[in-house]
Image (cartoon, rainbow, N blue to C red):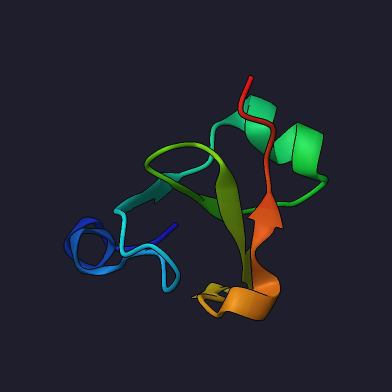
Length: 65
């Protein structure tokens, strides 16, 4: 996974909210091996080959529960 310090520097490119690693349940639901979830849990960004894809076009909407 990502370095903890690097994670504190990353944010959503759309809302500027902090990001956190996706839980195992979220990853299963998304069908991904790794992802970062926005603080409000309404969007996720995939991580491919260890690289977070933090561009608006890669945003995956999540249900607001």
